[in-house]
Image 1 (cartoon, rainbow, N blue to C red):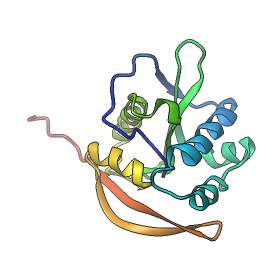
Image 2 (cartoon, helix red, strand yellow):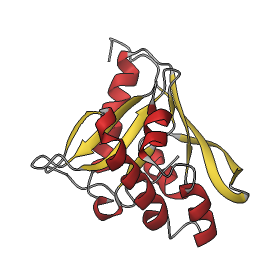
Image 3 (tube, rainbow, N blue to C red):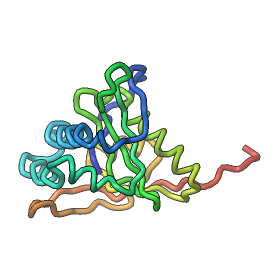
Length: 176
């Protein structure tokens, strides 16, 4: 799981969220790479970030990796520049949640997350799950997620710590 807003989100009137298009793959890859190599610098060392970023290094690989997932992108309204993205698998797993470092803390992750959770609820998913980085963990906890366990994962022979997290969605009572 990737990086998200690092502080309490402020309103972000200059973004919009839309469905991903395969033509967005190069821009999504740039956000992914920047969020890891720059945005995660407070929590992961250079070797860890390099190993993590090496998982996807070209747009075709990114497009293939996103295939079969619900994917939403946050874009600037004037020039449609991708500044963040999140994914949702049919089973409720959120594999990607990344925001460009320049706009972290500006409500981008919040706007994306609200879209993803709306789709999850519409699909009657009982639960969401993810593996969150140190930075993303904080964001998800503010959304009501719980840490199920800390875990060590291997990327290109390097160990990184992340957190298995979940959030039950449950149906809301009509009684309110």
